[in-house]
Image (cartoon, rainbow, N blue to C red; front, side, top):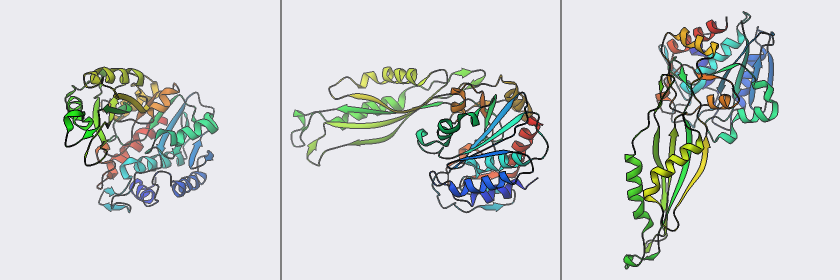
Length: 353
């Protein structure tokens, strides 16, 4: 077996910031085509899919994204003992290394396997390589269950939370700043709104034994006309992570109700700018249940959004399972350890053997 830490370091050293994944897609494609295991390898733009065609009763999809966020002084891999530091090491080139090694194993698997290496996960969902594949060759994504090798610390994280990005516009009335009492300052109206957002109680629904934790955060504010004008409009952008007991429409309706006390004046508006669906835990599937058992650790809820939702929308039970601590993803000190890499590889290899 390849040294998974060294292989991850190779992958880290191939730059693949979102929209610039071609070199890494080339690397992955070449390695898959040289596999001792017979694989059907298909390239669609900068997305690479490798499949076994053994006629097994079930097919497991193992997926991971090629792209990273921009570097933060960590573009070059650095190994210190059994830990690798570098951009994307946890999110998710460690997972890609595990996938490549699983794909290259010579022993015939007990289930058919599909390995999906795709572009543009770290940017707007409309750019996702999975969406490209779904439009161009949807049959390549067929399966009975799926594992996303997102960083989970080598434990199964079930489902995922959905995402709403909402714009709140508050109206006012322009006036000269020397005579503000004849107008209405829209920026001042943001105060009660932001206070309400900060104080709204968290929902923590428990679904199939997994506790989700909803969040609502203000992430951008804009407003103002000129230094001597009372502003007649102000805007705040909210990011809402909602649990999988709601769909996007229900989450938006609940948010509308929660913020209603701060709205209602002329010019006020609440607009959904972007949404991504949540996915419930689907660990009753035999393959995913066996994966949980193989880890020997109880599953937890995935609090972020992942492409588990993409597969869930298509009726394919899916879970997150990969090497690396999700808390270090996107940070300058991002890293992954040999222990996680080998534990994830062992669990997945045992699952399909």
